[in-house]
Amino acid sequence: MRDIFIKACNGLKTDYTPVWFMRQAGRYMPEYQRVRQKYDFLTMCRTPEIAAEVTMQPVRILDVDAAILFSDILIPLEAMGIKIEFIEEKGPQVHPAIRTSAQLNQLKPLEIEKIQYVFEAIRILIRELNVPLIGFAASPFTLATYIIEGASSKEFINSKKFMFSDKESFHKLMAMLTDSMLLYLKEQLKAGVNAIQIFDTWAGILSPFDYELFVKPYVKRLIEGLKSVPVIYFCPNATGLADQINETEADVLSIDWRIDISDASRLFREKTIQGNLDPLTLLGSEDEIFKRTTYILTGGRKARSHIFNLGHGVNIHTKVDTLKKLVDFVHNFKHKEE
Ligand code: 1CP
Image 1 (cartoon, protein in one colour):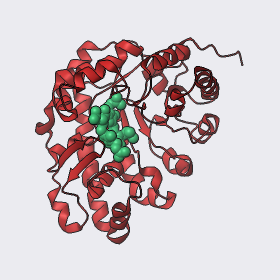
Image 2 (cartoon, protein in one colour):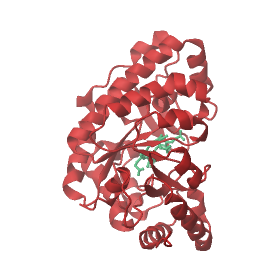
Image 3 (cartoon, protein in one colour):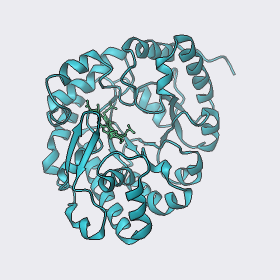
């Protein structure tokens, strides 16, 4: 297996910078579209052969150094008494939404038997892939926002109202989600994933004070339970949370483009840095893309180790050819002697 990605996760300097992309399987890719035209998104996630096939598409087409399981952070809710739907234009819908302590009992601890299709997809991929497979889950907080809001949100009013009016119940919800995500990720480990990424897409909406209180203890507990493979923590807007994030045991921190990679390398000295090209750069000219990529690869040398990625998922309007050229550019990049 090509293991340069795992080496970088473990903090080792590598001969070239490994690269993969969040949302590397998706609608920007014609091969994905062909499958998606026949099946809806949930059917694709629930059918191991299809999930495995679309997971492998970007590995074959782009030559990236890691695969990420094709699934969604909301999938485990199907095994926790919650119904999920993905509606075109509207995004994910979750019901019932849980906003009071009285509604907490509608959420059940994860029943792993109900989502065996996830682990079957992983087992197929472990047989087929020649690069490491990343398994994933949402952080308890990011998952909680979907459960409380019932959908995507911009201001997270219901989540914050719950958190600031009934903190005991909120902690109860977080503890339960942590137990369930730990079970879910341990099962992914048993099926064979080589690394884990925890998506904390929305933790950056909190003050450091509230992150410390409501998020850090659960992220810490989750990561400490998973120490047999490298753990990547994805947290956009991480700058103001640096002290807290450094206290988690994540091996890798995945950052967005709002922080300079040299600053991130300094702030998160003990972690491998993953990132951090603005995905919409890829809609611009090649000249601008490679200029920023050079800047990031150069800054990434200051980190403990560096994995090239975007600061968030691939945009649907991205050209496959652009991503291919970007992978080649990263692989062939020669650092000037220091
Ligand atoms: O209609 C379609 O084809 C569905 C679109 C889609 C896809 C392709 C959704 C709905 N999810 C996914 C796949 C997905 N989601 C992956 C697959 C692996 C890969 O990266 O290639 C992963 C890792 C996720 C994780 C995910 N889902 C996150 C965390 C990452 C991030 O983007 O911040 C979040 C927040 C979700 C929720 C979700 N699912 C789908 C959408 C459109 C969203 C975001 C909605 C929102 O902004 O709240």
